[in-house]
Image (cartoon, rainbow, N blue to C red):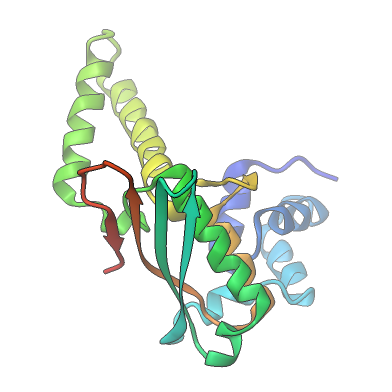
Length: 207
């Protein structure tokens, strides 16, 4: 089987909504041919999550998780399309995993689109100053800045964090794979994280 790049896997995942490992296997089987890999995923019924992503998710549940002897608590709202799915053990387990993720990894936002423009610009300026002080040429500096900004999103945005139970997958991939299996759109709406004695604002909400 052919070697495939991370960029190819990411593109295929974005185009189909299939899981990362499924995308990697499909690309390898297709010899790196993107269109053939998409066809393989469709044949296996895996390229379905993206089609469901536009559907309205107005049901769901608010899950909770208490950690560290009552010192950290999380509330999280996760939406799906029907009350039937919201009551299934698979959906409830997903919500619990997401609440545990928030407790353990302490994200600030659900997704990168929620990060205020002022915060992004501030981070860019810091990274640019750090890189420029090394004497590297401007084009290299900008690549460094973009790389560090991607790391910032991966650290602070829930859907881009590595999943605590399987760091080879992001939380976003976990949700996408659940959409494919369950057959309904699933949206992480908002969360609130409370830590005993912490004074900072504890919540994040989807736009």
